[in-house]
Length: 347
Image (cartoon, rainbow, N blue to C red; front, side):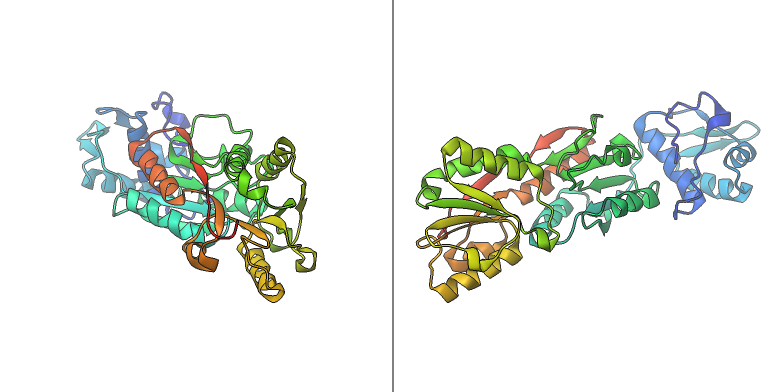
């Protein structure tokens, strides 16, 4: 949908209707006009095209335009002056948030993040949640198929490939990137993200004395679980090994037969963490004494499992709260969410 963002300088170029959108055409027109008022493109007292002209421009029925204008009049957003046409009546309007949320996949920390986001937004906010499961094609299709259906978009661009072309389809003032920033996307926009490379480097350095108790230190990525691991995490991990002169490696997938006592492991997926713990029980190894275990991303269960699993994690509650504050305040800022190592029994 092309919104009224050029102050209606040329009425013949107004297009409010996207035939591919699932949103009813009259609702698209209502949303486009209210969006343009909020953005400042439409001013109080500014004239709108007549019903006939708007119908011609959008190749739609006059009844569709009339229905949209009637809703806008009912809300007091526009007025009709007999013999003259339709005019913007007010610019201070409260529009209920209807948010499209595109997560990568569902896991435990998303519950914490989502709950904090809900609490930070108005109680009448509506959410529709989708998942792309690290599939770029699905990511693109979900965005394209829902353009114009919502008045705000929260996107988790968990890809190492450049998806900036897809992101540019959305109006910047209605977009917030969550958990990961997007490479190649240089426009002004809102984001609350993790700085993966620096976060893991700083967190590991915070726990370096504990890590050095062990002969080697490994990162288990868990590729077989189709889990996205940002390239920055792997880069930061390798940089830590080099900087601290620690022997270790990056392992694509967990094979419990290759686990060794007196070595430490950073396990990325929860599935691998469970297999790791099961094997330790079989071998009678005590994590934190015989073998080292760090898990990525904190969840409530990790606080009590084995007396507490050491984690590297960002503050997901703060991330959700900050995202909500940016949306409510209409602030187009990019904010790095803090990360830390929580030292518990397993290291």
